[in-house]
Image 1 (cartoon, rainbow, N blue to C red):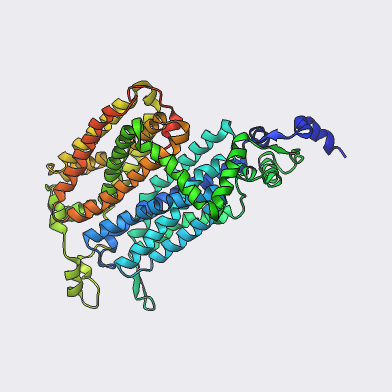
Image 2: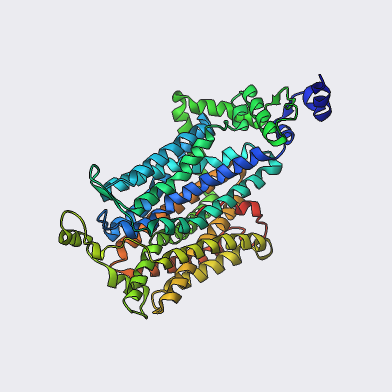
Length: 538
């Protein structure tokens, strides 16, 4: 047979000795297998976006079906983030002790199921519970997919793979308003007496937003656990099987199999193996809690306390506006369009909000049979809501690229101060502008404060040693998610009665964040890399 000489010629060193995993990844090449992983990872990241932000398009058109007050809309828009906060540490712990794929796969299916069931709910409390569960489960893949993807690649291709997944995610964010427009503005409806609901397009939209989770889960059924995790658990033969499968996909089925006799354990993997086994044991739960405490406590002690406090406040302020105010963006645009449809050409955003508010419970009584009057309900979103949402996502995609190109030359502080000052000023000016189109553009600029998330994350990475870095990013982003919850509920509580106050709070908070940026340690250094900017999340 001529296969043996071919193998020897192709990979002679592989037959003589076991190799390190880094070298094994080079042997498998970069090809179709890697591209499939990147695509699936990007789809999962897009699924997280659709599940958390897609509800903002549902709130204006579901208010009568679910009898939602503005305050309840605020709760509903934030509840998914609450689910993410509650479960992120749990999924991170389980992913380290049970496996990446072992967590990603079931949580994707559970997120799809809870989101699909939320489309069949009949009142505020039911849909709130289901959306909380959706956030609880979707947190699993969102917290783990980066580790899963990265552990199929060596150092040479890891950043490229993550950036590729981020590109797919970016396409998903741009497609969100297009998907919403193509579904929500349909005019059909289907009565389901057994469930006591009228199935309208907004319900279908919730299911469509969940489909990427379901599709990704189906694909993951045919994919293995990450080779790095398998090796860390001492499952060398399974690791070799995964590497051979990668090589077969990338090099083609006609080439000889990858000649690999063994993979060397990495020093770090051997050290973490013991810790993972202890963490997986029920008897060591107190030990795990102690390790978590020892990992977290230093961030709030000594010289780290000041920097931790600054970074947490900055993320809180950014997320309060970029996510909290975003949740009501389609609703407010719809109200402005309604006023313009009545011939009102000059009005402030808040005057349009006041002119279109109504008591949903009162209307329910007027409508009879527990349903609101259809002539006062919104079954569609105005086209301008979709257009401006698409523009916002396009601005984000372009803006992140521009920041990545100029940040090394300009530095972090000028970018933070410029964005905070511009967005904060626009937030305050919205209160006074009576030209609706100009006010909408200022609203768009206000929401672009999300650019600062990546810059603040880059600062966080620079300010902490390796053993505290991941926890510092986690804690700061947790405060950011808390800001999303506070912002959504704040707008829901104040919008109908003190609309101007919501914009004053968000605007002045961003200006305050701009001032606080001057106090970030080492902020004047120009050493931020593009890779660090990839640690971002809206």
